[in-house]
Structures are given as C-alpha cells and as structure tokens.
Image 1 (cartoon, rainbow, N blue to C red):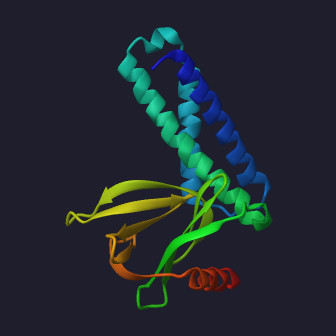
Image 2 (image 1 turned 180 degrees about the vertical axis):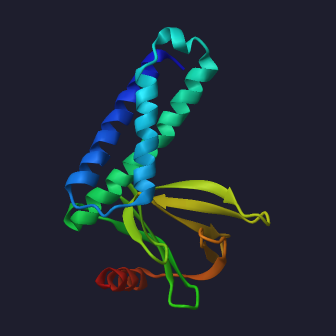
Length: 201
C-alpha cells in the first residue's frame, strides 16, 4: 500500500460521490434512506481523508484500513450509478445474453426473482426482492444465516437478494428476515415473461 494508490482511490471515490449526488438530486431519483446513508458516510470519509497528509499515514496498516473503507464505498457507489443510469433508459443497456434465473413466492403475493445475464462489458443481473427491482452489473458476497446455512448475497445497484444454488436445487433468501424459499429455475422464455410482468406493474 502506498500514498499514490490511496490518492487514486480517493479521486475515484470523490468522482463517484459527485456523480451519485448529481443523479440523486437532479434526475428525479426517488428519495432512498440507504442511498442517503451511503452518501453521508462517503462525505465523512472524503472530508477526513482530505485533511490527511503523508505524515498522518506513516502506519501502513492504517493506510490499508482507510483504503479498504474507500474501496468498499466506491464499489457501492458505482453499483448505484449503474442502477440509476439503466433505470431511466433501458435502451442504454448493452445486449444481454440470458444465463440462468430463479423465481420464488412467499405465498402472500410477494415475488422474488433473480435473473443472470452476460454481455460484452460484463456480467449483469436483474433482481426483484419482493418490493423493489434493479438491473445492473452485480457483486456477490458469501454470507451465513444464524443456523449456519451458507448463501450468496447478490447486490445489484443498491438492491440485494440472497441466493443458494447447490447444483441441483435453487433457493432465494429473504434478507429482511432470513427466510429461505424454494425457487424454480427459469428458462429464457419464462425469465422474459417474469421480467415483463414485473415491469408492467
């Protein structure tokens, strides 16, 4: 870890922050507590790091800690930018090739959908978490429920959903309460129908 890397990530974080602020304030994005919390956290980090100089960062472990924080915030902001950018005009989406998808329902009319796509510029996913939806490039993190069940958290923009695929069966995890729902694999035609229905609501 060196000062140059730290400065590069600081510049990228500042640019991403300004982009999200602009999108959030000037393009009719609906108010969202999670986005606002992320922006507030990022603003605090930018202000704190902006006041530091090399003498304050003699400890390499401290530099790595600051850098890790900035990278985490940067990835979250970039995901939001992807989500916001493609939400307004789907014609801007690259050509996507369907890979796989799954659908589950909680029995009370709440649908959970996750669809995976690939394109020339990366991997994309569409998710509907029962309330909100998003389509953008995504990240995956390993997670574990209180009972030890391992699952993946798929994050698309600012939206996350739990996902389990053991090679045979597939499940969707409601991140609100940890409930696991047995899901069905979707063919490309089925995936297109679910996506169309949800976007007509």
